[in-house]
Image (tube, rainbow, N blue to C red):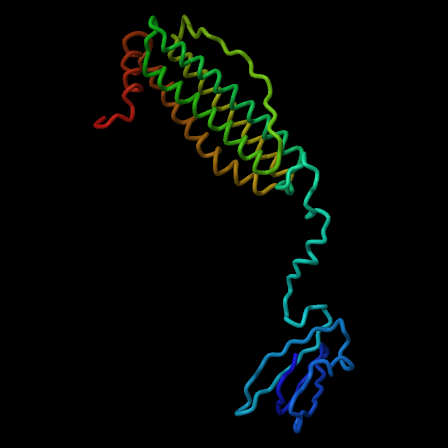
Length: 270
């Protein structure tokens, strides 16, 4: 690196001492000539400042090992960290970073929760779709609820793969197929069961969020909050209202009217 001649050359150390070197009469100035004055570990910056018609170059002497360019971040030095090594084993994830075994296991457990709840809702759909039950609105509601829980499980599976974990599907319990209840009736009993399942799912999601917090996994926390927590609260509120309405109408003809409202929910003009 070469600098053209300037009227003065100022060097200021960390202690505030000034060294003035006259450069008048020199056509070129080589930075290599500074090597006998400044140690190799020092860093020099050359801000150009105007003084009237002349240009002044000020060099500050630092001892913090910064490069001559003034760059603070040194990526090739940072890449020497062992945790940033790229694995070569074919069975090891290349994308995994700061994703603990506890978080991986907790995600797999939540996948199982979502599939189990989806299975129960699917059984409820089949029950209300029978020809001798024929509550098509409740059948529609539980079919959509089952599909939503399965979507949640698949979303968790995608996240597991994204973080470099391994999806492990656990066994699913066989749900009941009969939902008759002599006192409450099948509609109210089914929706109270659904409300309890949604609350249980919410507890499991909060536990999953707590695992992420304990393992300092901010990305996993954000994922759970964004994709699940708010939606779960809304689902609990919605089913709680259905339970309250069915308790008011009781069994019989009122259940049919309630079922019709579910069947046509979302239709244009309603």
